[in-house]
Length: 81
Image (cartoon, rainbow, N blue to C red; front, side, top):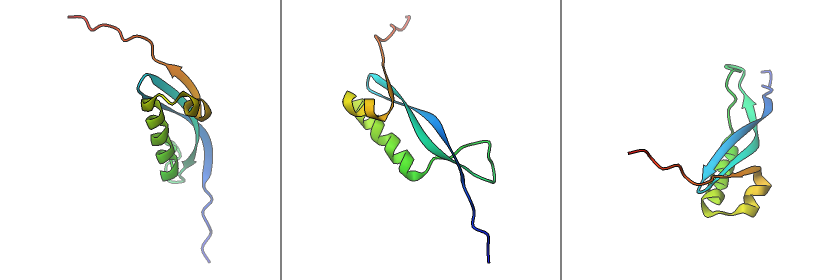
């Protein structure tokens, strides 16, 4: 009988940007036994982060505030010519 694999998991912060917002979102990552130096995201987590990016692009501040810590980008710096 094979030994079942036990995955290690940890909380990490992922940054999402869209429109005028940047959001720090805490998500769960899987730590693979083969290379524990780089946490991996599950497909469900990636889809969630894509949804957060859509909310940011749409300016849905209420949803963003539920997802994480929201930062609003201030005026863009002019490009030197």
